[in-house]
Length: 399
Ligand code: CTP
Image (cartoon, rainbow, N blue to C red; front, top):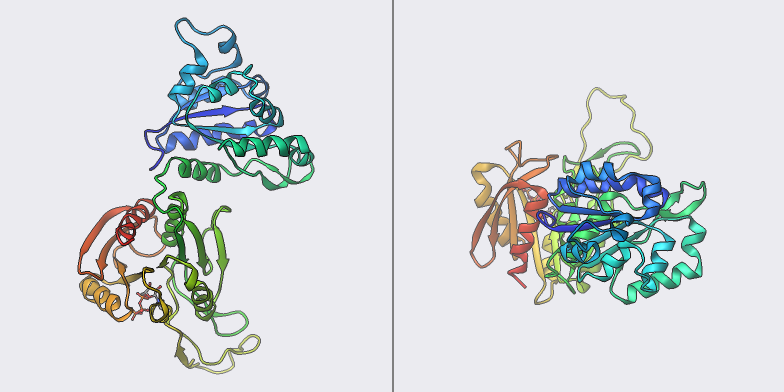
C-alpha cells in the first residue's frame, strides 16, 4: 500500500545473507514498488545480477558500471535522484565502515551520498564482528546522521555461531521501510490495541473461546506503528505471531486482559479494543482434567468484566476510546449504536459476521463506523491492512 509506486533503491553487499536479497526484491515488487538494484563487488561474488534483473525487470547496477558508465549516464547521481528510499540488505561491516567515513569509491556508497532519500541499513554478519567496537562506532555515527539501522536478528548464524547477526525477515525489513515512507501523523501518540480472543479455562486442558484470529487488531497495531505511534499490543492467543518490532503483552483470560488494559489506561492517548473478549467464564475451574464419568454435564458460567465499560468510567479528557462490534446484518446499526452509547465510546467499528468475506479468520473486512457525535461512515470491502489504515484515518479525526 505505502510502497505502491514508490521508487526504492536496493543495495546488496557481499555477505552470505545476500542470497536472501532476491526474496526481499520479490516482496518489494509484489507491493508494486519500482525497484533498482545496486550490487557491490562482494555481492556479485555471492549472487549474479541476472537474478535481480529478472525479478526487477530493470537494469541492475554493478561496480563496473561506476568505473565505465553507460554513455550519457552518471550512475551514482542517477540512482541517488531516482530513490525515494534506499534499503541496504544485507549491509556488511565493510559497507558500514566505508559509508561512515564517506569513502565514495563504491557505487552503492556514492549513490547514498548523492541522494536525499531516507536510508534503511540492515546489517548481517558474524556475531563477534557485530559486537566489535569498530562496527559499534560506525553504527552510532550512521544513526547520528539520521540513517535508520535495523538491528540484526538473533539465532544460529551461517558461520555456526549463535547470537545477533542474522538478516531480519523480509516482512520486518519491508515494515521498517514502510515506516520511513509513511506519514508520521500518529507520532508522539501512545496507542494501546487489543487483539485476538480471550480464553476461559474449564479445567487443566479445556477452555471456552471464540474464532477470532486477531488479524484485524494486528493490522491496526502495525499501521499505527508505521504512522509513528508508540504502540502496545495486548493480545490473546493469536493465529499468527506478531512482528518483532511491536511491543506486545500476551494474556489469556478476560480478567488478565482487563488488568493489562486498565493498568495502562492513565498513560495512553488512544485505546482500540479489537479483541473478541469472552463474556462468560466457568464459575469453577476444575483442578486437573475432568473425566467423562457422567452422561451429561452442565457448566455454570458467570459474566466477565466488560473492559470497555470499566475503561470509560476511568478515562481522562482527551483520551480516545474505540470499540468493535461483531454483528449480524439485520441488527448491525442498531446494536453498534447501543454499544457505542452504553459503553461510552468515541467510535465503534461494526462488521457483519454472517458474510464469509467479513467474518472471522479471513484476510478481508468491510466495516461501518459510528461516531459519538452522530456521524456514520463506511469502509468498503478491502484487505484488513487497507481497512486498518482507513480506521486510523477516522481515529485521527478525533485528535
Ligand atoms: N468488550 C469488552 N469487554 C467484554 C466484552 C467485549 O471490552 N467483556 C469489547 C470488545 O473488545 C469490543 C466491544 O466491547 O470492542 C464490543 O464487543 P462485542 O463482543 O461485540 O459486544 P459485547 O459487549 O460482548 O455484547 P454482545 O456479546 O451482547 O454482542
